[in-house]
Length: 422
Image 1: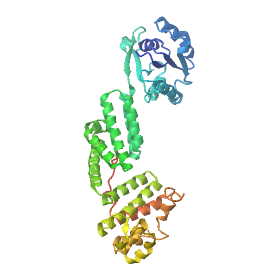
Image 2: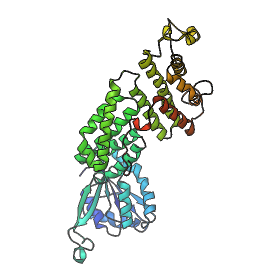
Image 3: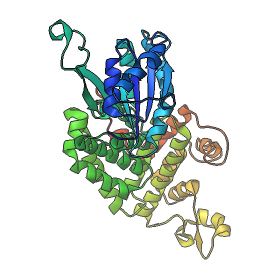
Image 4: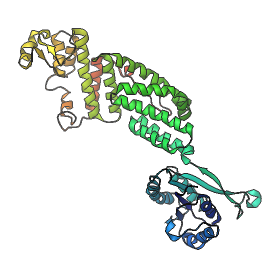
């Protein structure tokens, strides 16, 4: 066994299994988890028995960790959590440092508690059984017949807990946090198939995280990787959720292809901005949502000016393309015969050009000093310190969908993983 093993073992009334574990793992450090009733047994019984079997444990190589009530699961769990930093510090020393948790001794409650707590530790589970038992094979292990029956990485068996955590974060649009859960767990599991399954989840979450950051090229590449890992997704998510994800990924890649091929501004960019704003709204981040919505409203006007009036960029609009009613007003701020426009200017120009979208913007109450867009300007993400309220966003959301002439069903949507969701 490794010469850098930390053994954590529960202490009960039978001491032979503890000695068997000590002989098997030959730890350099031991943490004996005991109750007040078994505290004295460590020095008076366990250590001498181990020494007689060739395992010399001096007082400097082991520590005692007491559980005040060995029959209280909640109490055991509360106290065992204190060992988490001990385990993390030991495992962080290097690859040759391993943690072994033996859950043979102690009460059933102690064994259950340390099994639950250790399921999240980077460790190996150990259980001491025997070749012989009393009562025709169903009683206790006969002394002298002890043997380590199991030595397993709990993450191989309990990785589904990490998957459950992944699903919760994923459906909250916390894609980077979900990817980190998968990546950390992937390092802890031993089985190659489990690693592949977790890798497929990590790629899925990173694909959508990249999309949320408008890194569309990276997102498309990662989604293509997800499609190639279809069998791993089916294994980790099951048939219903995996097919939902794979179908959603195919639709998203179609949208990404259109988005990457389009020369901005385009209707594809408008849809993407609106969808991003909705995801921020779903998270309750109304200031972030409104910032994206404001950009979407501007993009709607830019697309209309480009496609309907040949104005390619609102950063450099030739004055000769501006109707007389606005040209005189904007001439003073022109530079070399061109003028740069903001959102309100875009819609004013559309209205002056006779485009119905400009009038629709005004009729919606979005122009002028009393515009609902003032809430965006007062936001801490724009020019002020006033957070955007949910109802304010909802009104602007309805305005944006109307101006874009789309409904929510037209927007690209990210798949959800929780069972029972549509």
